Every structure is written in structure tokens, then in C-alpha cells.
Length: 156
Image 1: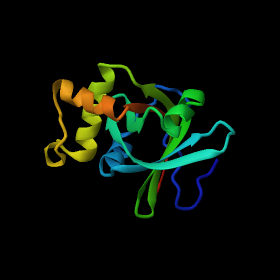
Image 2: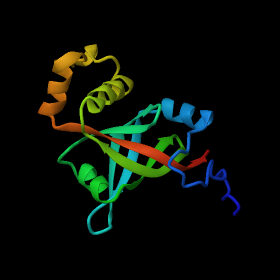
Image 3: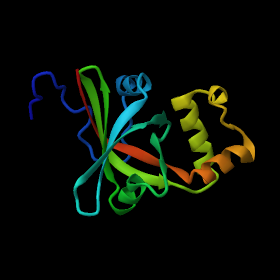
Image 4: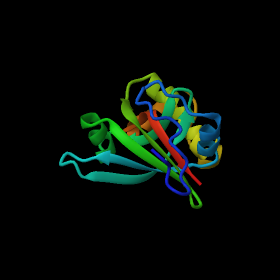
């Protein structure tokens, strides 16, 4: 299949949950902070949100509330897509999302996520260590979605 004008061929066409981002894709994601997340509602229609994301060693992380539509949608249908725009360029990641809601992984991953998306936290007055950080997450009913890339498209 030929790529459309201005669109590169898919970086990977594998649907393997073990797909790793290329160095170029990772650099693109590292330069940006916001993505558009698409999940499926119960009736099959798309639910789309603009959110902060972080890239960690085993996937792309998005912080969400446990009562949000995003959290519930992923619980029912884990197939998702995210789009990261940079001017007219975009990176589209298709993958499977997993709910990360159990401690201690939730706290450790969320701390890393928050540091990537909002800095060290001091300028925001947020607790970063120990029980205070976990209590902040609990008070906001916060958890994470971990997206494992299965297919990535990048156009310039």
C-alpha cells in the first residue's frame, strides 16, 4: 500500500503489543506535552479528549480520574488512538490501553508522569514524596492509562 502524499508509510504495521517506538517517534513525543485521546463509548461512538501524556519505558501514560468516561471506556474497550500535533505534522499511535489503578505502581508511575508533564512540582506547590503524593492522588481519585503502541503513523 502506497503512502498518501505528505504521509510516510506506517512506522510499523505489526499489531504486536511489544512494538517499541523508534528513536524518531520517541523524540517527537518527547518534544510535546498534549495529545488527543480517542476511546469508544458504550454505544460505539468516539469519545475524544485533549490531555497531557508522558512516555515511560513501557508505554505512553495519561492521567485520568477513575470516574471519567475515559477510564470507563478503556475498561470496556481497550483499543484506543492518540494524536500528537506539532504544527501541521502529526504522530498517530494506535494501541491498547490498560488501567493502572493499583499502588505502588500507580503512585510511582503517576509521579514520573507528573514530573514529565508539569516539572518537578515545586512550582505548582504539589507534594512529590511519600504519603502526601498518594493522598493527593486519592483525594482526586486519580489513576493512569498505559497505552502500548501497536501501530504508529507519522506525517510531516
